[in-house]
Length: 252
Image (cartoon, rainbow, N blue to C red; front, side, top):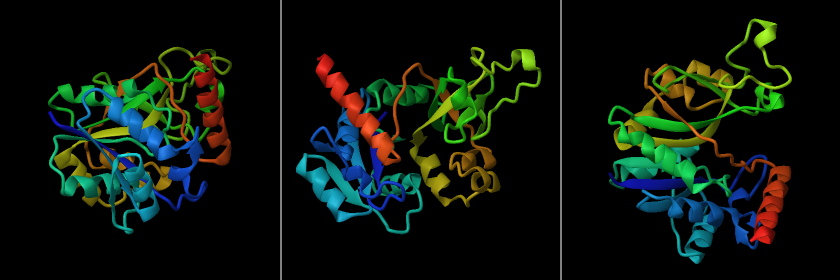
């Protein structure tokens, strides 16, 4: 089973311009993501898919491979699909370009989901323990069925717990709320299908691209992990990641 990890890296990020090239510990953020994807067991190739020559040049400077994708790509998944059209592989892993500290084990967990031949698309989730995260619309929640496939993703607190005694307002009860992480795996045929599907109504309302698959009747396997990672969407996020990297280096 050949696995290609693709890192979508958009230069013109709305909230944090030039985000893939942001300096973290003396290296651009995209370099950190590339290193972690490359170190994950089971990954055969790592490709950065970008919209800008400056990112291509930065990736080539540290010895990585980068390809220019169409300016018409509306999402990271579109960029991954564009790579998949011209590159044979069984599985494509979408490693978001704003995850410079992503543990390799998280990437490996998504790859492991495809040991089940029925799985066409997979992602990750982690149990929520902080009540602020439950009610934070920036923390996406997911509920799963007994097979571990997603029933729904939402920015709302799902499931809704009707009885107050069980609501876990101060501390969420175990096995109740799960945070979704935007790290995806696709079989190649499904990825190419996905890119051709129209934006769905639920996707438009929640602004969650993965809902497109559910609206089309495509199951998404959700692998539960104990790991945590940090997205970089704002300058505050970037500073937090820089601090985390510094404190980790000091402990070594």
